[in-house]
Image (cartoon, rainbow, N blue to C red; front, side):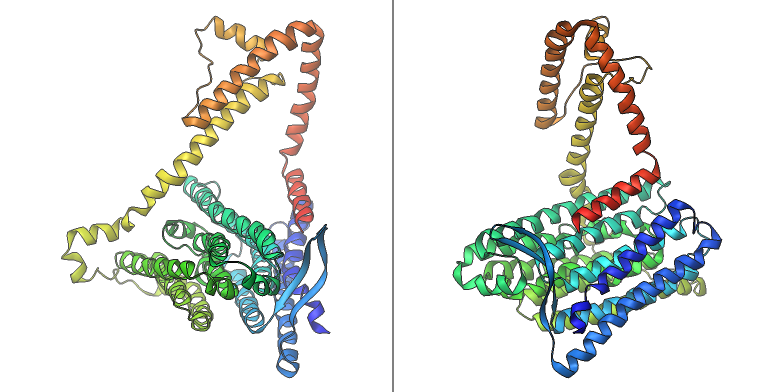
Length: 515
């Protein structure tokens, strides 16, 4: 029963990532001397995942595809059950084997490409985590398990875009990509919730079987949540701008993330949910519309790119848009074959791009004449149809404003309530702050931005009054002393948790809880 061992395919790369991270934290594989151990772990893990899937695939050729395989229960609460299950049909086994092969080749390419890089071990740990996450997305037998892989792939993407975290541009682009994809994740969570509520479960076969019991409107709402997730993850309009900013990471990560694997995750989700979308004609129309719009956007914007990676990524956007269009037209099998062929070809192009750039000294290809004749269209192509500033207005600026308000609330309320040292080095309880503010004409007043900011400012003022009038005056000096003692302990704990080893421990504990 080889299919019962399918869980090893995503687990092996994840275990390799954990082994590399722990070894680096303990100092066992650091520096150039540790590159060999890191390399062996990554190659063995991705190679082992490929062998597992090949063995199951050979058995499937002889006996037929296993279909749905439930390994063990994960979460059980009343009538709600979530299993660690895998869907081993032609789509899952075929794309899973292909993705494992591409991951193995990319790891082997990266061994020489990343040699003597300061973040060699960090790069391979994240790359292995991503390989496991993608295999989990493709092989998952239910929406919850696919969502775990979905999130792990997003975290890996964020970490590799910010590989050169000392560069402000890389850090800013990674944050922007992370925030943009959270919008799609909201749609995925909504789809899972509605599938539980209206379809009675989130196992793929159970969802399909329950579709005749609900109307087309309800099916459209469920499909709409998953469609939002797919559009964001596969960089479709209006979420398309993030993928060009994601090229800050090293070339191997660009190849495996945005050229061949992760950019196709949204398309794969739509293909996997083919019965659901066929039951929701309105969502099929939206699939075709956004796919065609993205294909046109990628084609026109790619005509004015002057570097090879940007040209390849806009070509990728065009091709993925055509896959969405094919799904919207009902050609799901064609979209699946297009996905597989494009993943292979684009991985080859991205991995060969560095060598090609060294061999060619020719200037970039000029924009076609028909485009330059139209000043409006040419400007729109150069400006990428102004989707970047639109994303800034709709997503980035509100997120930053909310972050500033929350940070101000933490500094002015939470820290002062705990009696933590302020930026001037003194003990700043709320009463102390009130007294100092009275002598400084409101210089420390918290100001909010927008509705949420004003709400936080009002809440802060209310807490100031409560602490000054009821807590400190009622408790006298003893309460102040206790606050100061508690503050010292909190500061010490905060300093401990800020150490990399404790941060790594918290991340590992989070993964344990999730998995």
